[in-house]
Image 1: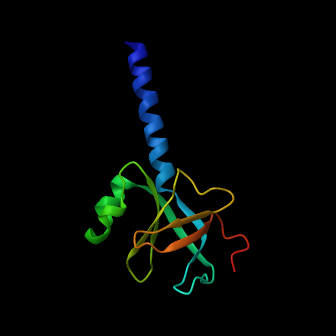
Image 2 (image 1 turned 180 degrees about the vertical axis):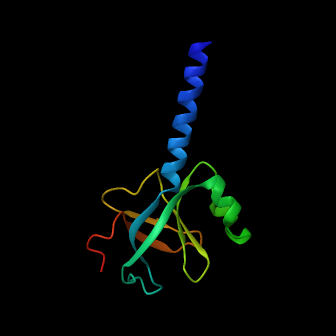
Length: 118
């Protein structure tokens, strides 16, 4: 019985730790690819890592096919309203940066800090 309670407590604490890691706000540096193939200037943004199951509750119906419940997405909430969801292709932004697409098919380059973000 003691082992059962210990296992249950450990599972619950790991679950809470994983949840808090996803809800933590990250400072990112991001630029998107314009229609002419060049990239925008870098934006200093704040984002969270959000599981696909939660993204499906937020995203516009027209882009729902983009969301896979088992994937993670970088969630940017814009000050003027709206959201952008970039496929994280893993559980964190790689140290070398991330090249990925958002729900509208726009390509983004994302770095995991504001260091040297012009």
